[in-house]
Image 1 (cartoon, rainbow, N blue to C red):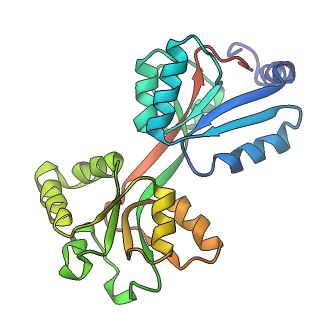
Image 2 (tube, rainbow, N blue to C red; image 1 turned 180 degrees about the vertical axis):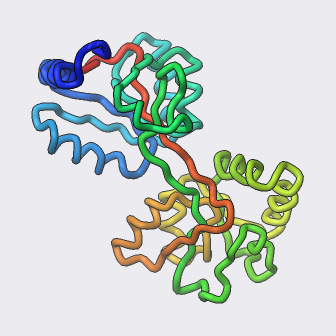
Length: 250
């Protein structure tokens, strides 16, 4: 495919996709269904089947299926918690799309196993009726103010956020900040969708490591939530990967 001229290559893909008739996607991000709807408009002859899972569950289910010889998925859209382990487990095929040439080196691996097609932030989110403007933090260290004690929440799997803090501040300073946050007695909640819902309901004032799309979705529904980009807000790149034994490869 990659040796063909661009127009001929695209035509071959489109013709093959019509024969495939469907695509199976495992995704770990909130906006997966919106992406699927946009794809359906461009390619109405291809059915899009999306299975939305958290990163850990996506990884566990995929590896279980792979080891059992069940090849049910074509495309993965995940984060670093699932993308790299899937590559290391041998479940991912190399795919050198010509579109990769337009992306910076930070958004793709050299061998073609993954390409990141969007980025997201792990933002500081807050309930707008509970947090006055004067109390909005500028940095994560501002959250060590006694006013925030008992008012914060954090995900039970904050690995990417923790990695961002270490990268931004260094291990010693990040550890100092994290110990201070622990003394604030934050609520530990599994899942960022649930966390923003509880925050909107007033269960706590703010979330330390929220994905911005989950906040935007709730805000559109009229919930009293918003977010702020603090100093050194972590930015994640989300890759798309092709399954090694994709049942609908085109």
